[in-house]
Length: 296
Image (cartoon, rainbow, N blue to C red; front, side, top):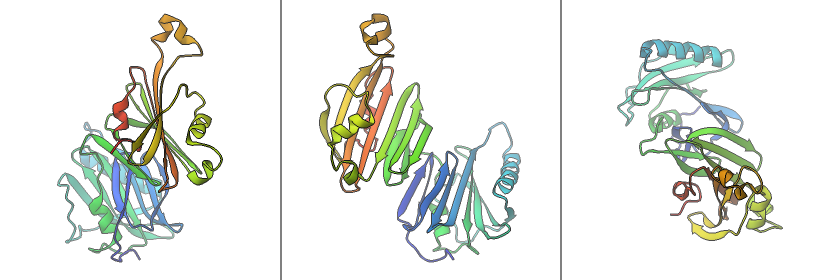
């Protein structure tokens, strides 16, 4: 049962969607429009979303999304009344509560439509008979948001917490043991956020500068040292041509890219964080301000 009065201290933010969960819950899997949350290998909550079209009536999209979700998740959805105690701080949300079941399990959930961004989200909870005021399900729904309110998108997962400008979209990501990479794109500007660990092992026999040059052999020039809220960092800035010695040809030098790379050792969390910005125009130092290695 998930009806205990457990505090929801852990924030999760992924691709525009954000919510809070108990400390014992973890991200089990994800893709750009889906997050599965588990506890000790058992599923606890699943969140899936899609962007709705303004040209199609909401009722039609709602029915289509519900039918597609039932088929995709292999569940049967049945409408339930809105819990009398439930209240969300966002008046732009419309909620449709439901119970669900499949061949081996059952639970409850909610479909959420945002009148501001027109996103449709489905959240289902496992092994939960009903919503209670102090349940984890109620707390997650009450904390749920589906679009940024400040012009920046928050990202909080796997010990990482940073933000990106709203115009940057997630273009690629890699989740490998010991190395996480998230790539964003806006107007031909590439923003990459990296995390490696455990730092104590990776830096046992090399300096941070040696580690950086090992991971990014294209780094050139000397690094500048600085301090941010994660600790000390090193920063490289250089221009990169289309190929070696391309800068010697004036007409090709106009096609060079401006590379800014910052790497830091977060001793408290035993991680190494990196931020790389690749731009055709200039060294985009302002993008560092909201990054994981931005100054306080």
